[in-house]
Amino acid sequence: MIVDAHAHYLSPQVIAELERDAASYGCELRTTPQGLPQIVFPGRPPLRPVGQPVRDLVERQQRIARQGVDRQVLSTWMEMYCYFLPPEIGARWCRLQNRTLAEDIKPYGDKFSGMAVVPLQDGKLAAQELEYAAVQLGLRGVMVAPNFLERNLDDPSLEPLWTVAEQLDQPVLVHPYAPQVGFRLQRYNLSQAVGNPMDTTIAAGSLVFGGVADRHPNLKIILVHGGGFFPYQIGRFQRVYEVTPEARAHAQQPPLDYLRWFYYDTMLLFAPAVRYLAETVGGERVLLGSDYPFDVGDSDPVRVVREARLDATTERQVLSDTCCGLFRLA
Figure 1 (cartoon, rainbow, N blue to C red):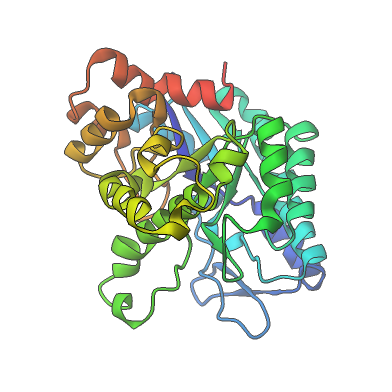
Figure 2: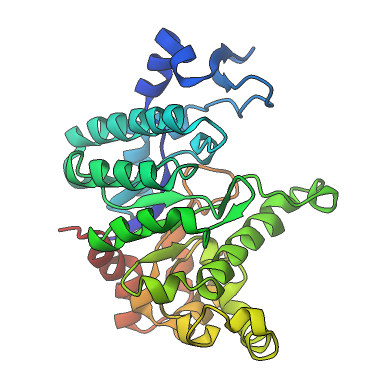
């Protein structure tokens, strides 16, 4: 069974709920001239219009079948983190997404699995929502951003979340959204080419240097987009650890020792990079990812893995075994 662990979905039920009562979620729902729903929060730029591919499961089945993919693990559309909301509204916002995702995938049997989204703005509420999503809704894992409210993932407020994720064996997929990168990456879509992987790399460094990996050794963290720059600049991280006392204050081991603590997806769009990643961290730490359905994603993710010319065991791990084990897929 070939499984894509990195794909996004937003239930049409979310849009329907906002049509009924957007005010309860602190927003309003508009319609673009093209007829697409668009969510607007007061005082903030409108979110991107919600295109049809991200909220469709019928056509999605046909498209992933053409890719040779048997199953997708679905996580929310990144715009929907909304960590700026007051905690109570943020928790309500996440519950809406988690409930409707669980309901939508149920009729499709083993075609889709779902990951939760939680309100990082309040670590205790985030932990409670993850527990509810895992135990009551049957979702597997949680997607979080690499930062929230100008705080990194080693922020002490998130300790309840990491504790619950570790106890319930729920994988945590770290996915960037709208990195705050300043004027230099505003043109040419450099925010995608450079900003997103940079954001993930900072998250990896924070989790290592901040001691999260030591406090929660059984926590399972997936870094999308091949881990950002982390696996390819591990030597530089290593050197920083050696020469910087602050970098050694919380991390019990040097960064190289944590390289295989993380999991990584294959969303690198370049076979030699996939090969390097698998050879460096091992196939048991790499899983297939496409970033479906976005335009910077990989429309043929299986092909890139095949072209990496991995040995048969490693290729099977990357395409199937690692993800099935991580998400407990039958």
